[in-house]
Amino acid sequence: MKDITTGASLGVTGTMEASQGKGQSVEILASDLVLYGKCDPDTYPLQKKGHSMEFLREIAHLRFRTNTFGAVMRIRHALAFAIHKYYNDRGFFYLHTPIITGSDAEGAGEMFHVTTFDLKNPPRTESGEIDYDKDFFAKPTNLTVSGQLEGELGALSLGEIYTFGPTFRAENSNTPRHLAEFWMIEPEMAFWDLNDNMDLAEDFLKYLIRYTLDNCREDLDFLNKMIDNGLIERLEFVLGNSFIRLPYTEAIKILEAADRKWEYQVGWWRDLQAEHERYLVEVHFRCPVILTDYPKTIKAFYMKQNDDGLTVRAMDVLFPGIGEIIGGSQREEDLDKLTQRITELNLPLKDLWWYLDTRRFGTAPHSGFGLGFERLVLFMTGMSNIRDVIPFPRTPRNAEF
RNA sequence: UCCUCAGUAGCUCAGUUGGUCAGAGCACCUGACUGUUAAUCAGGGGGUCCUAGGUUCAAGUCCUAGCUGGGGAGCCA
Image (cartoon, rainbow, N blue to C red; front, top):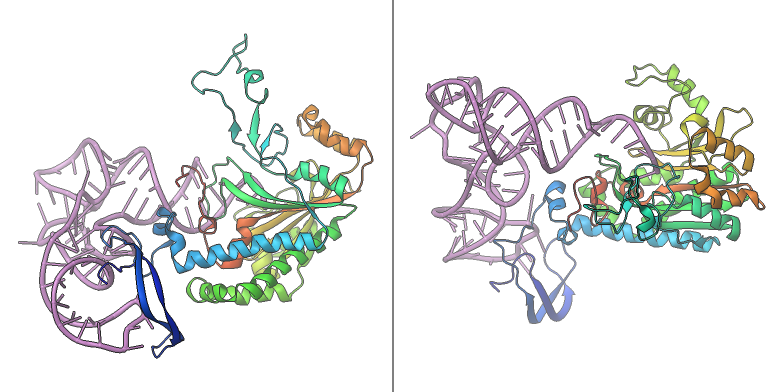
């Protein structure tokens, strides 16, 4: 019995009976006990008490053994399963878009380079440039920052598709909401407009909340008690209320009329800052908000231009606590308008020939959005740091385990 | 990347205006006790005060730089 310490691995055989002890309903009257693995209490870092999230992050290889991380990882699994179920039940096809991409036109941030070159001595051309023709893919390649462009190819062939895979950003972002490696869900639907897109986003999020409430009740109760007392109430609130849908221009008017000083100026040509989004969601509406029709100058090249010539059919879903959880748009299906926008923004037009072919050959209206999986798990668990809702977080200066 | 706070025992932390300041709780070890649930009681071991410089008679404490972590911001999902 001396060797049975916190962390040891046991096999117990016996009969399960109603317990007389407090705080538990059943207990095993053991007839046989096997000690599979001892656990030296002097060096085992986990104790039978609460640890800080920061400490547990340093021992990420062991932290699943705690109640909290067990609950978080089970909910993470349930959400992943529910996402596939949701789309499968609605006739969407799971499209596997590439992890390694030869395109640097997504414009979604800094990328990780992929190469087999010896960095100390890469092949050079006669003019001294790195000779990518000699590299594995005979061109510069990167880890994907988004599967969207390929997703559009799938949608314009199969109808409704979604992607669900790892995504990489080499941004030097040190925040509780960013990872260098994260998972993203990107549905893309042919013949859907922005309203259809918003309907899908709202229904999808509510389905996932409902699914988690129905299937992970014990874990949610635990997290509600130990991590975030408002968790279940917040989930049920989002589930029970319609998201506010509001054009960007109307949001600016609300912010300009608000009786408070902004650290960042509010103006029609400016993107909304965290303080503005937070005000709309947490103070003004007290409800999830979908903002639409942003100025084209602050949004990506592929978004459908409105007739006013100023705005695009973009939508951002803003959630309490985590800000932008979904970003999406109706896509520009007009070849000329799309090429013009690409040229204006100085993007490498010739690298996008395959993307433009969708508009060249039987183009169609279509829409889609991206949902950051870990931000979803964050919202669903009440955890406060994104590094604690993925098993092995990758962040600047940290790729341990 | 910027702002800000922090780094002292395995963990969570206290440490006054620079001068008995090497401390507590938990954990661990020993013993007692026990229908216990983060048990209880008694005793014990355990420290590069983040690192490197500097100021000073004297630095855990003040200064500089770096590293690590938290919070906020930017970038974004």
